[in-house]
Amino acid sequence: MKIVCDASFFFGDYPFEGDLFTTPGVVAELCDLRSKCRFDTLKECGLTVTEPSSASIRMIRQTAGKTGDHDVLSETDISILALASEIGGEVATDDFAVQNVASALGIRVRPMLQRKAKRRTWKMICTGCGRDVENGADCPVCGAPLKRMHK
Image 1: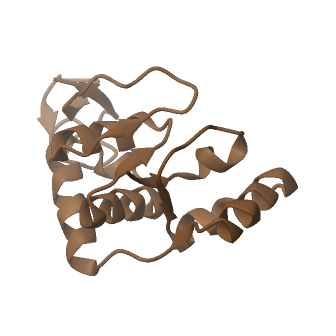
Image 2: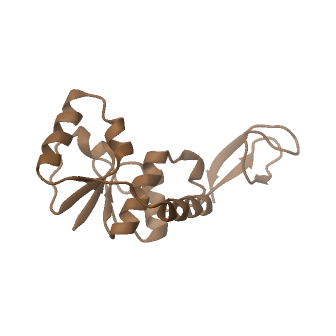
């Protein structure tokens, strides 16, 4: 089993079976001593750090656009999803947006501390006139702020 680890994986002592992978973006997010030590220990035991291809990243962005999660995913989130897609692995994360996009792509998810997220499709709704809006911060019709809601 191949497991692609989000930063949350390194913040605790979670049991695992299989080969571990992560991306350089996740490594950059590890800022406290405990997570860095856990990373170093797992790296010594075979954890692989690698970048996904640009084609995989484009595919994740397209899918995240369809699910409405694009604006809430970080570049690191996109990279772990792309890597999991490339290697046929599952994602170890507590991030609901990552879980949602993974679900849309058929990528298995291993939640760390939280319950598994329900699959949702998001849209932007104007808080003033109620219109569905593609993107942005304010409604192009009435100027009111937008709110992210699931369909």
